[in-house]
Length: 141
View 1 (cartoon, helix red, strand yellow):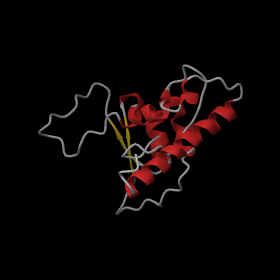
View 2: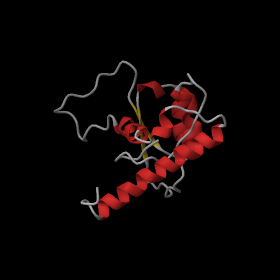
View 3: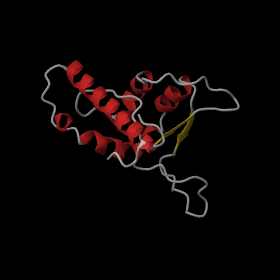
């Protein structure tokens, strides 16, 4: 799970070939940063793709008090004239590309899942650190 600019918020590992919809509840529970309490004036939104358009996906999102934005299966994307907000595509893929720069994560050699999860969380913290340094001094990199 990432925030709007691609910063990682939650990481969950699972065995191979587990669909993302089955990990949604665990991912929402694994958020590291304590989020502010949602209010009617400032609700918190969660954007998901068409794969989560099922009752379990919607139930998990509403259980965690998010406003779901899930495109319906078979629904066409709006034309450029009808868009009100910029596209949010590829935010998670960009974060995964940042994580793939950590070569120890590309191939999982760890026998214990706890070790791999710790390395993955460390890489996420490194991404946040680099973003912080870049925002304070853009000439650093």
